[in-house]
Structures are given as structure tokens and as C-alpha cells.
Image 1: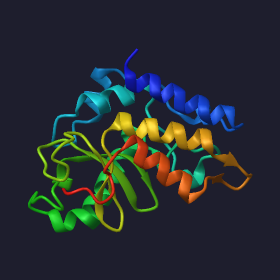
Image 2: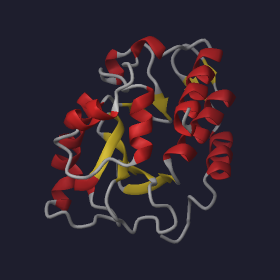
Image 3: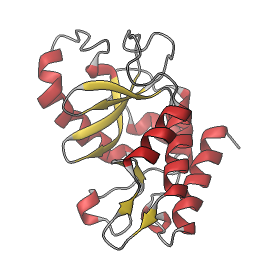
Image 4: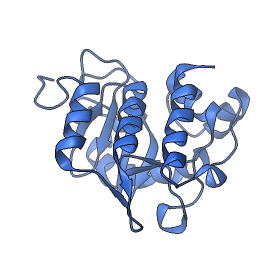
Length: 199
């Protein structure tokens, strides 16, 4: 089993250990051939970490507002490949309008950045073409919402961070609770230099 799939299993268990189980609302995994077929619209090759993620499960098909148990990566919902096409168009109509000629926006070309998680007009993307947003990490997770910034050094580091966050969180009926100080300590521990690093 790949490291990414193992970490996704661990994150799902962390949800279940707290009495929340989004498993039934996650779509089944997709094969490499299915990924290629579903991704014909995307203008860049899909990197291996994203293929591994979708070979674990194909995200959630419905918006978070319509899902009983949301599989969050912090504050973004794991998006199915089918829904990612809609989210990509939405991102390009807003932030991408600045990047209409595929010019690098804060170091990445949004036109070749894949939105694997989304919520309420925000996205987590992985740049699938050369970039300068993070010179030491080739496939960072970038947040696109009120700016374009590196949030995690890699998909694996994002999963490590999310697992730790979930283990230290409590479910209080209306949402997950975690102190800001604990959130930031965990974030920095798994992604050293993520805040204030020279990019």
C-alpha cells in the first residue's frame, strides 16, 4: 500500500475514533485508466501523489453543505474528480482571470494547478507544472482563498498534519474544536518553516 493511501486510512480512522464516519459518503477508488478518462479536460499531467490519493477514494461528490459527514482536509472538503472540473472552472473564473495567459500568479500557474479539495469559494491545489512558489518542495499544497499561499509542503505532509489535528480535536455536535495554539503547533511541526519562509 502506498504511503498516501495508508495515511488516508489513518485519517479516516481518526474521524471514526471521534464518532464521525464519512466513509459511506466517499466514492470508491478510481483506476489509472479512469483517472485519465475523467481528467481529459485538465491541461497538465497529473502527478503521482494525486493519482495515489484518488486510487484510495474518489472524494465526495456533493458539496459540504449537502453532506452529513464531511471528509475535511482542515477547512477544505476532499473533492471528487467529477466535481473537480466544476471547481476548476470556478477557480479560473475568479482567481484565474488574473492568470488568463497562464502567467505565474504568486509563483504558480493556476491554469495547471489541480483543485483536489474545496469549500465555499476556496481551494487546495497542487501545481502540476513548474513553479517558484516553493523552491524546496516540488509538489506543495497551495491554498487559493483570499490569496495564493503554500499551506503544506506536500500531500503527505498535509495528511500527517490533518491526522494529528483530528486526533487532538473534539466533535462537539456542531463542528470540530481545536485550540488555535494546538493547531499552529501541529501545523509547524509537520511543515517546518511553512509560515514566514522565504519563497
